[in-house]
Image (tube, rainbow, N blue to C red; front, side, top):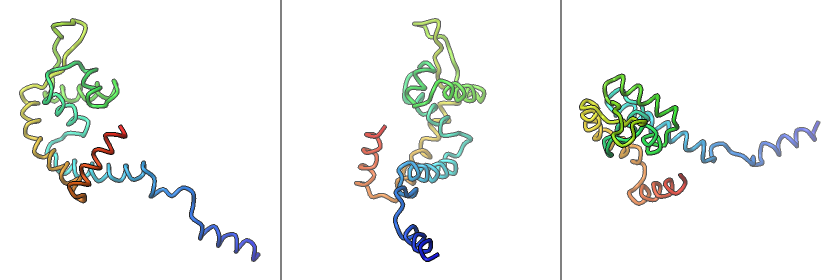
Amino acid sequence: MSRSVSARSRIKTSRPAYVLDEQIGFILRQVWQRHAAIFAREIGTDLTPTQWAALSKLNETAPCSQNQLGRLTAMDVATIKGVIDRLTARGLTETSPDPEDGRRLLVSLTRAGQQLAEKAIHNALAITRETLAPLDPTERETLLALLRKMR
C-alpha cells in the first residue's frame, strides 16, 4: 500500500511532459476567442470575420475572381463561395463577367457594400487596437512580425 501512495505522490509532484496551458495552439485559441468577442461587440454590423475579410479586401483591391479573393483572404474555395453567396444575398457584393475571360466571374462591392466597408473600417481599427492593448508598441510590432513569419 505504501508503494502505491508513494507512486501517486511522485506523479502529482512531477511535471507532466505536456502542459496544455503552455501549448501554442491552446494559447492562440484563447487569444482568438478574446479577439472574436471584441470583434462581435465592436464591428457594429451583422458581419462575421470572414465576411469582413472579403469586404475589406474587395475595398482594398479592384474587383477580382472569387478564387483570387479566396487566396487573398486565406479562405478555401468552399468557404469563399459561401461568404460571397451570403454577401451577395445581402446586396453587398455582386458578380459580373470578366471582360478578359468570359469563363470567369469577377466579384466586386456594390455601392451598399462599399459604404458598409468604409463605415466599418473605424470599428475594425478599434478591434485591432483593443486586441493588442495588453502589449506595448514594441511588443505589438514584435508579435505581428513573429506571426507573419509563422504563416
